[in-house]
Amino acid sequence: MAHLRIGSRGSQLALWQAHHISDLLRGQGHTVELEIIKTTGDKITDVALAKVGTKGMFTKEIEEALVEKRVDLAVHSLKDLPTELAADFEIAAITARENPRDVFCSVKFGSIAELPQGAAVGTSSLRRQAQLMAVRPDLKIHPLRGNVDTRLRKLDAGEYDAIILAAAGLTRLGKTQLVRQVIPVDVMTPAAGQGALGIEIRRGDAATRAHLAFLDDAAGRATTTCERALLNKLGGGCQVPIGAFAEMKDGRIHLHALVAHPNGKNVLRETREGDDPARLGDEVGQTLLDRGGDAILEEVYGEGFAVPQQP
Image (cartoon, rainbow, N blue to C red):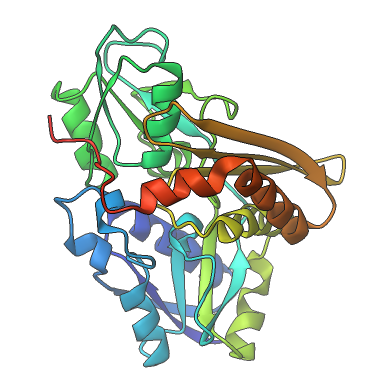
């Protein structure tokens, strides 16, 4: 049995995830210690994520700890991991997924459709903003940063009529009281990798990889590999208006993908099925680029794009 050191962000959700993996490893007879590491994304809390635009903003400092051998593995929300890892690293395991969908949370209203004209909705995700604006262009979208508790507290205090969050985080933390609607994928396509945990190690660390093998879920790896291949083809990180949702049906992978302008006026969706996860993601990504996704993303990446203003 091994002594394993885990690197993790210090947010409530990140710690839940790290402790969850720790418990599973201890169940295999290993001893585990946890090192909390503050990342760039944790330090910049007053700017909308889309404005920061740094790939790996939630992973860079943790990867440095891996390189320096201060930790043996890192537990990430897979959607925070860049699609192209540096040559020093590999993803040793992708866990079974929690529900990857987004949810509508509100004190007063039961769904997106029930919101009054001009209602204030909190999200700092351009992906979520774009899809909200596509179905409800009257809504006022306002930035929303902070951990899950902070976001829910702001909603409870009446700063927003509703907020959009990932189902997985709320379920893991047991904070689903204000969930009013699980949003269908054809209304709001989730982020690539949402709901899965990615366990990162130093490339070539065969001993640690072997210890983690039992955590690797075949369906979780296949679906997220497909989603991340699409994201990689489109050149996007976790802060751009790209959605990807893959699921296994009768042994085949079904992929629902999206590229959208943040104003919701230009939304491209593509659905396809296949057997090879990476190839399917790559092909669907190319199709979206050919249909005009390249022009949408060029505009989003341009300097002049304005994120929602503070309310």
